[in-house]
Amino acid sequence: MSMTLLQAWQSAKSRLEAAHIAGPVIDARLLVEAAADATRADIVTDPHRALTPEQEARLADYVSRRERREPVSHILGRKGFWKVMLAVNADVLTPRPETEVIVDYVLKQFPEQMPFTILDLGVGSGAIILSILAERPAAKGLATDISDEALAVARENAANLGLAPRVAFARGDWTAGLADESFDVVVSNPPYISSEVIETLEPEVKQYDPRLALDGGADGLDAYRTLAPEIMRVLKPGGAFAVEIGYDQKDAVEALFNAAGANDVWTIKDLSTHDRVVVGVKNPLETRK
Image (cartoon, rainbow, N blue to C red; front, top):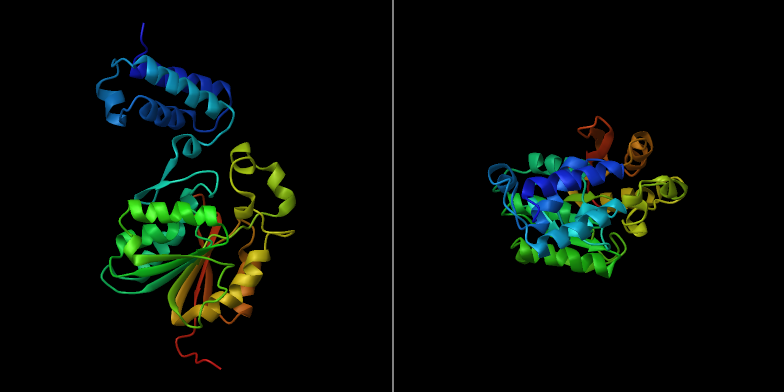
C-alpha cells in the first residue's frame, strides 16, 4: 500500500527526531515536498494523496542522507535566502538567516531607484549581492572569490535570477587588483571561525561547508586584518560597508575598522540578539593622498 503525503511527512519527522536532528518538522516537510513533487499547501489540503513508488524511494534516500547530517540544502541543491532561491552545493557556504542582516542594512541605505555600485568580497553562492540587486534595479555589482567552484555557483544563480547583466564575477584574493574609491558599498561574509573551533561544530558545518569559507585563522580575525584597510581603500568617500562577524568578535573587528579610518562604526545584532554585522562609512570629505 502506498504511503500518503501525511504519512510520509509523519514518518520522515519521526526518523529525524530519532536521529536528534535539529528542526525535524521543517526538514521533514521540505524533503517530502521535494521527493513527492508537492507543495506545502498539498500536504495540508490533499494529505491522503499517494506517493508513487519512485517518490517513496526518493524520500527514503533523502531522509537517510539527512540522518547522516547532510544539510537539506545539499540534498535538494537549493536554499532560500532573503527573497530569492539559490542553487548551493559543497563548494559554497550554505546561506544562513543571520547573513540577511547585511542585506537589510544595505537596502535601507539606498532607495529603490537609486543607482549605486556594490562589491561583494568572498561571494560564495552569491546570496548577499544577488539578494540586493534583485531589489535595487538601478544597482550594479562586482563579486570576487578565491574559489573557481564558488564563482561557478554564483554565476549560475545570477543567471537563474536574471541578474547576470548587472553583476560581474572575478577570481581574486579579496580586493587585489581593484582601483581606489571604486564602490558605493562593500559587503562581505568572510571566514571568521577560529581554526581549532571548527572541529567542535555541528557535522552539517564541519563536514559539509567548505573549510575555506569557515577558517579565520588562530583567532578567527585573519580576514578582517586584510579587509579593514582594503575595504576603506576601495570605498568611495561617503560609501558604506557591512561585514558579518562571529558573536564574540564585535570589539576586535570594530577596532580594526576604526584603525583603518572608518567613521560611525557600530554593530547590528541578528534576530537571536547576537552581535552579527559590523557597519560603518568612509568619511565623505576624505580625499586621496
